[in-house]
Length: 118
Image 1 (cartoon, one colour):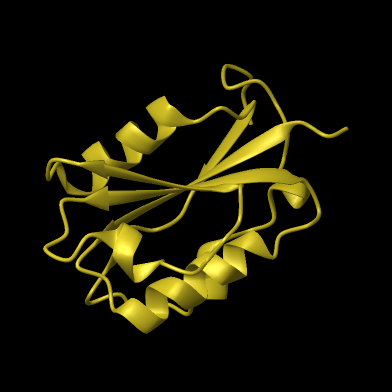
Image 2 (cartoon, helix red, strand yellow):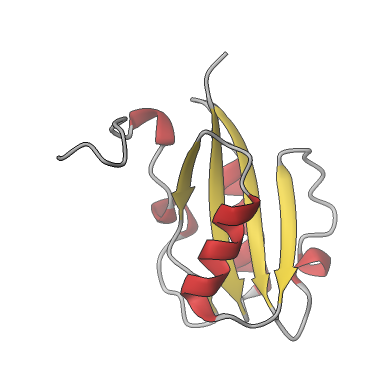
């Protein structure tokens, strides 16, 4: 079995339809074993409610006190169970990037030690 890859998606004030599309898109990754950690950076409307109905054991929603994009990403990384970790661009109400463009398949990513030079 392949190594578990943790996908971390920090969100703050997301557009609901766009967020659902991004989550469904990420969960369609089948090139490797994944977990998707959506980090709710203290959104006024809790993200768990926006994702109601998406039933997938690989999806986890982590709600934190507002910490900004880097703090939210770090919280997601700290909660990750995977051997490898990938993070999307923080998703906000002003995000203009298509959901599928936020992820690159971890299976196609370079694999090397974090201390190994490029």
